[in-house]
Amino acid sequence: MQKIICIGHAAYDITLPIEDYPVENTKMRIAPGVECGGGAAANAAYLLSKWGMDTSFVGMVGQDLYGKRIQEEFENIGTDITYLEVSNSFHTSTSYILANSRNGSRTIVTSRDKDTYVKERQFDFQPTTILVDGEEVETSKYLLNRHPNCISILDAGNLKPGIVELCPYVQYLVCSKDFAEEYTKERLDGRNLKSLQKAYQKLKKEFHNTVIITLGVDGSFTEIDGNFVIVPTLKITNPIDSTAAGDIFHGAFTYFISNQYSLYDALYLSNIAGALSVMKLGGKNSMPDLKTVLGYGKQSS
Image 1 (cartoon, rainbow, N blue to C red):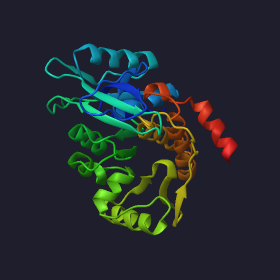
Image 2: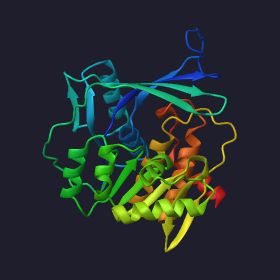
Image 3: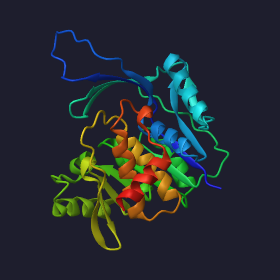
Image 4: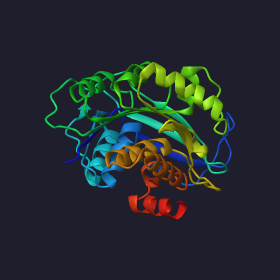
């Protein structure tokens, strides 16, 4: 039986729809926003639970209103939060997200407490897949070392020491275009295979794993059977909000690769899941059903 564990960041997102970026020292009236739990690994865990997988989340929240709301969301969707630590000395991270409805971009300001990490403990289960986002480095390394035969995935969203430290530990290094550019010093173009190949080869040589570079509207890039490929995605003409699109991609990739889809199909369907999410405001609100993703996959094949 499959058991997935997601380790990392949990936050509370407050997403505000805007049509123009605010001008300093002015007032603005907007339509109602959306509030829900967020964070890369937390969003992935929620999606996996929504898609019917036995999923645990390891991370930390405060013993406050937002922490309680995050717990309730997980409980309602069926995520195991046995290893979600609730701390009296920690305030739940809060992200304020300005979602530009004209182009679907988002600007995020995160209020985060001092760096506090979950305590080391014994985990009484045998996972089949581990997804980490770089926020709980020591716990991630402990579990990755303890279960070396698991499918292991790193969501490398940006260039931070913790993420770089975890890169050699995983089977799948799934990194953003920003991470790949910053780490390899290569200027990347989603339509330029040569630049992508150079970045890929540097990452592959350094970390010795399956490297995937996500490219947003251009899909994702990797090597399959000795050939470099750009795996396409859906073209969304009127995006509303790209919040959590990357988290949803990583959660979907974890689902498909855990269920033995080919690498190409796993990436293609994950691209679709991420693309569909930009059509709604907010993170969890925009998570598509598995049936919908598979349906679009069949239409596009």
